[in-house]
Length: 159
Image (cartoon, rainbow, N blue to C red; front, side):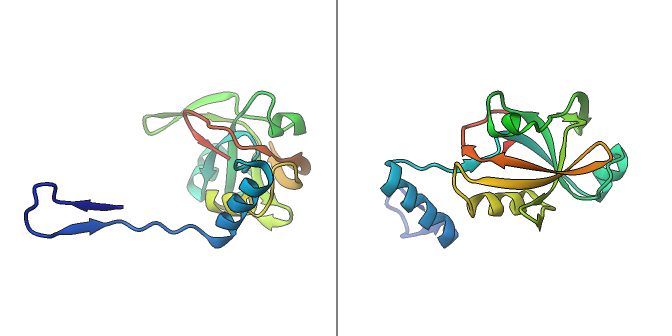
């Protein structure tokens, strides 16, 4: 993307570059060739990243992970029995839902940030079955989830 002076003044341009991981680009091209559209894998959840400070404040059993705020109706997470939050709270001026499952692992890989979850999702296809390691309250458990096609979610970070 390049922004130029439309008035024909001095020849100045400002450029912005974007990079896409080759694995993501290959997956998108493979989807187009196979289905005629992209089919990005999704858990069909709205999430909140958790770090040590948040974990301590709300009493979570792990000091990292991805908290499920909301499970989308009829989606992959709901079919797998994952749970969203039930307790309204505020992070600054933003409403959040606490009390949902806390994702800490994906197919044996530790999940500490939203980027970890995104990377693991991008390494799979819609329809793949994965194993999430979660905390439900103080209980750690593994849950099998069949990934769905990604959908647009308004009001939160969808995964």
